[in-house]
Length: 171
Image 1 (cartoon, rainbow, N blue to C red):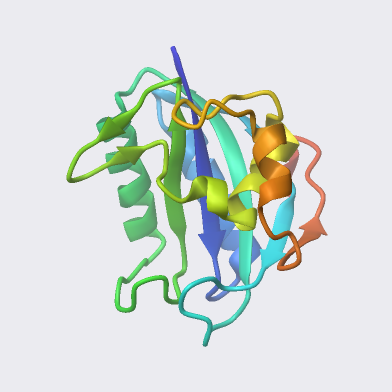
Image 2: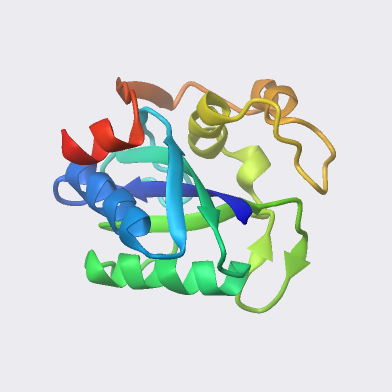
């Protein structure tokens, strides 16, 4: 079993419901088990700023899938939730990014692990720290706890506390 961490975000439609649906779809896959979910954070957009606020979470999953197979599942969930790619870093109903996969390091045309900008983004690190402070970035060789003070937290605000995976999916 491998352990992966996925960052999820939405800034169109019913954002929290979209996050719940995405987590439920991940968890429903026969080769994926969602083991932890962070609280929901509302976050300021990064990159393309002329858009609505995002809602972001991080999840931990156990999986028998390879990183590329997990990416395919994530992309199929984005598609099912009507993700359309028009503007880079633009509005989206759902975005799932694999940020870490075990201690693997890979850089292919389709997938880069660890996510190349995860350590620069409060909207990734703040939710991730909630579910795993001790995890070590395999390239930077720093824990999530050590990386957290290096990012701007101002645009990241707790919106909804989450007690468990089941409670989040079913509330």
